[in-house]
Length: 174
Image 1: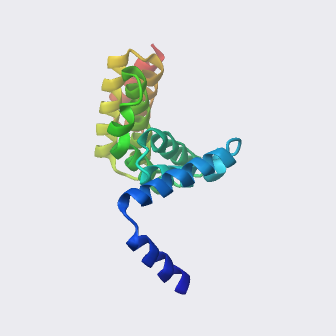
Image 2: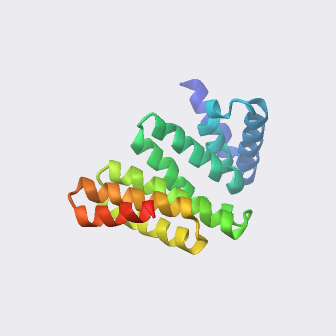
């Protein structure tokens, strides 16, 4: 209890810039120390780079943390990381080429669509699929287009929209 209070007092007295610098340094140290074992600390890396306002590093780590959670079927927790990634994507985008940024965003939206569907948020999931599909089409990225059509088809099949399912899955195959 006393340690927590001391921590609170110290943090309150620090400037925002100093806190950000400390988070950046912690993130950099974690990254160096765990270069071959990033998966063990990916959540911490995402947090410290996000708090340090290093969007170009926080963004991929947030997505990796979400992937790790999705593999363990912690879908709600994974969605929180994906939502955080969406929020900082505009800041991370400036350090990527346009195609790379759009490709990553399309993939992020596809992951969000799957998570939202799993959590029963069907309308939001379909919106994410539409946005992912628009980006995939603009890129002409067949792999993402296949992923979007496959997910649309699977979702439609689960809710008994068999015509939509067949059409989407056929597009995925073609």
